[in-house]
Image (cartoon, rainbow, N blue to C red; front, side):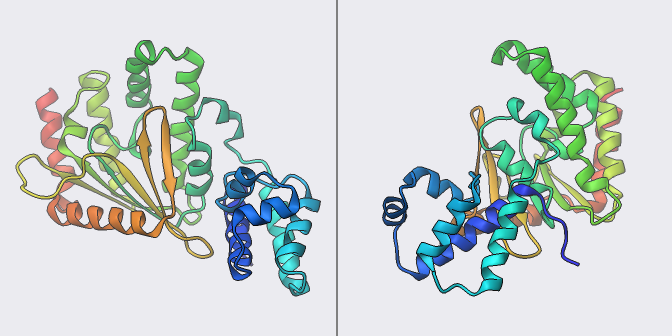
Length: 289
């Protein structure tokens, strides 16, 4: 039986298939949009999975225009993808508190097979404790002029996302590289940091989790900004995500994905071996005492 996928995954899968039909007919987005009376911007967003097509009639009109002779079974596959793309995601209540593009990324990460991530400044999100996350959002609250509700909801969402690596059924394969700065920077006080170190060590013992530290004394390549690469078992191309001011970027552009993988591999080879991560964090923990 095929794995149950979330609405975002199905929306992106549908968009990919529609794009393939359009390119096979050698039509531009502008030509299709004009012929069907669609917004060019809307159609572009449908193809990259950021927007859905609420009306099944719009999908049928689009498929008829792109390939009127499409086999019945292929048409039914597209209609099934469309139906599944309209279902509600479990994180929907948090959508109002997410930065731009985060809903798309959140929807995709829940169906990812593998995640490779680099974080130079703070403990990587999926490894954070509640105390660390709350302190991090609390520090930013007066500067970014956010509300207590915004802080509480984002901390709750962050903790719920950890289920990706702790769930018993097909947990996400996670490989994280953090710069030494990320684990040395004080957030929430010594006790919060000690608890955070314990959490990283504990999660690092999971078969599906690998954590490496890029220490200051190593001469190697270091990316300036954080990024995450998501790989999927089937249907979708890998994507890369990185943080921006009050937003995030998400792309499956092959050149960007491959560049991020090369960056990750270079830092992986220069970072401490995973087996030494626990010892390094335990040494830091003694410093906080």
